[in-house]
Length: 498
Ligand code: NAD
Image (cartoon, rainbow, N blue to C red; front, side, top):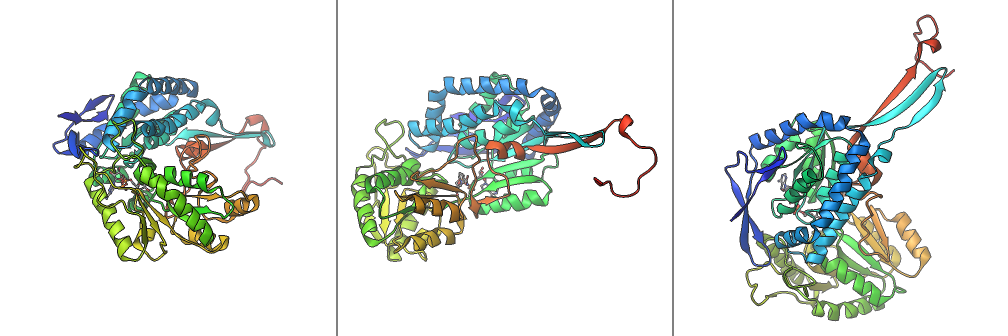
């Protein structure tokens, strides 16, 4: 059986690991590899390698650092098919969807190839008599990223690209469910010319995460995962005086106005609700039609589409939706569906008891549509993270907006309408970080920043875009005066611009 090792000091290694964890193929339920779990000594080795390599990398001029990213992007493109297949076999999503996962990360690697420009500071000529003032962006030192299972390429690339381009060394702790692609990315980075030690990967769960959170040499931590862990990571790392950004879970609402094109809205809900089996932090899990007629029309448009959805393994090119990640996730989702029924929601499409011939042990969940869901039900309150779409009927735009705003999460939201006034009002007032207008999954492109509000995000700088550069750098401001500009005599008052 294949063993997946850490990636430390430029090589894949099982290091000091004595414990291993199974990595499954979610389509079959079979164990396909074993993953080495990092010990304290493995994390120390990764930090030592990072600490040894970082000063020289930081001193390498940004244009040379950027060139590594040009090569890195080319190598990822060269190996796209192989990476996507590897990703699909561990995650379960379709190969095309895996390519999307890789490409949305790759775009951040492309963005940071502009590092020489992105890292430029500011300069004021003549801030005072003979005084010049300038600021520069310097790397934080060693950064770490802790990432979720649902985007095993995109999210590591969101973090490691700006961190490394800015001159940091980086330690990645990917999800233990689908760890192979992150290791491959580290190998490709070395092939692209990245010095060993600048990108290390260690595997494991809470123990290694805690080691990272408390490590005195790790200066900044980026986390993406569920809200309870995001909150814990934020509080613990901030308590250690580290810079930290932690992104959590979501419950994304899509409002459908009476004037929307119902076919287009239904198509959008299909992709956003059932793509990647609903395991996206930007998935739409709550459809909010305005008015009873809109609700009836959208439910009627969704039903045949859900019935026609092709559920299957990634190895079948015809599949549109794969399995969920683990047996435990499947059981949890099925349990929530039963709760929805028990609490009085209407099962408009019943996905229960779904089974796929030849894949009976896979973690497939039948796509499910609930109508007449209310805000007090568990299926509304919990992030289901599976192929279950809830319809919450509302009587007015204001009621739909209030529902969205009262939800504790604030990652993404969307409105489908032809009414520019309603769309503009929604974008201005809603308390959610990423808003789509006739765009169901409004994930910003690499040169803008990604981040939610409320319980979806802790910390104040977002992922990628200029926020990513800011997060992985510290600002230093220099005030300079040359001897010819210095007056004789001591000054005891606070210097001011008189
Ligand atoms: P998770 O919180 O279980 O795991 C995320 C990471 O934390 C993993 O690397 C895991 O090993 C580690 N971890 C797990 N338990 C831990 C513990 N007790 N202490 C310390 N570390 C621990 O999340 P997941 O199931 O891998 O991913 C799905 C979740 O991530 C969903 O809630 C989804 O909404 C969220 N997510 C959010 C975003 C976003 O940008 N807001 C993006 C993707 C996923």
